Length: 388
Figure 1 (cartoon, helix red, strand yellow):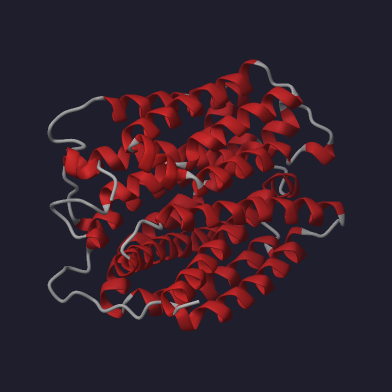
Figure 2 (figure 1 turned 30 degrees about the vertical axis):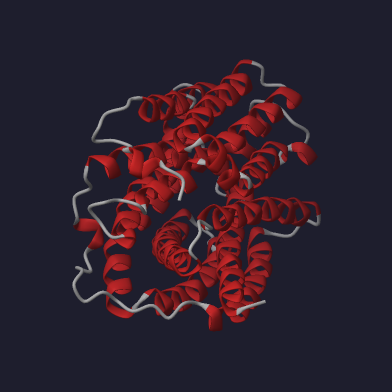
């Protein structure tokens, strides 16, 4: 294995670690809801702490990556992110869990921007598209985290003990990967306030598509277990089935995204993804049985799989911005959708019910289909959408 391949493996491991931590948090949300006796609306308010932290992390990420390079930000941020996870489980009151979740969201977005910046740099060095495989590893980690979570629940581990085990696994991954993380150099001609730049029409369109995809993804992460428990009325051992189906389909889909894009093109892939998201959520809402909801969540996972890798691939070929700046702009928009969706679901569920919330999220699929289908010269030029 040559040095670039080792770097790719190490960077993939870092994506895996991030997905594992977030999936571990998501797998125990029903337990945390029960621990604090939260209604859907109250849980939505608690989940709002993550996007708040995310937004606070945006200027910090832009400045720190510019000032010190993504390597040092990744190494410091990864240890801090892993150590924050057990603090969520140790919180004994809602007033304690709120600041911890804000920090968790802040560190998550800093790591998101830093790791994707690293991925684009490695793509340039390797001369081929590899971004989808990293996102596939993030998704695979989510699938793994769901499995670990189900095992921890079966063994009656508390969330705090569960999160401590995941922290230990994370430390091993970080220590293995750290020497292969790219030692990038900051561009003296580029401002550190990346998030303050105004996106052009192309990046705004791509950002909105990615926003809708990641909003759907975030909702499935945080509410799959609750939906199967309260609406599907699944037995305790099957409560995590929807989450596992979604994550398994999304992880598998991301590993074939590059091949699908090369064969059919980016626009058809985005259109098919939007249709799959819409169909899966509608099926899950109209026929909320164990089997049909599981199939619906599989369709949603397949639809979500390609959105972010394809959108980031388009953004990285912007004619007006460097790949790192374009990626920061799009990831800022999209990641906010990832964290905004779950609390929005809670607020709507409190006013109506969880089925109506999920039905409204299905509209995201139609939005993706529409945004990727409307063709104007300013959007998706042939140079932008062509396969690299």
